[in-house]
Length: 118
Image 1 (spheres, one colour):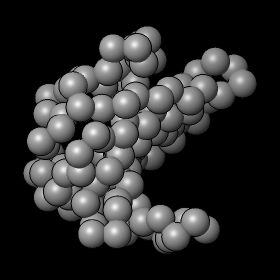
Image 2 (tube, rainbow, N blue to C red; image 1 turned 180 degrees about the vertical axis):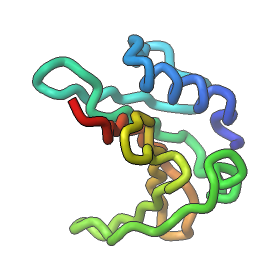
Image 3 (tube, rainbow, N blue to C red; image 1 turned 45 degrees about the vertical axis):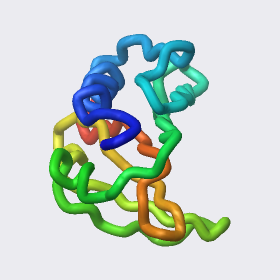
């Protein structure tokens, strides 16, 4: 990715998976990181806004083929990378990309998902 390399994105994804602190004040070059937490303090999701749009195929090379999600009420488009979703009994960090009208990635959302039975 031009504005953020995939190694940095993978590192952030690992931090989210481990529940480690995410530094919003020192984001990777070319990004704006926003951490959203649930009421219990756990990470709900991390949104990485890219300063310059990236091509979706750059993410697909690392996270597998994307699948388009239904349009948002605001008209925005998103894709999910199903290969990043957890299977039954697993925990994972799902990767979702927000797209502009040209189909380029403008933000990446890292969402911890847990399909384990407590």
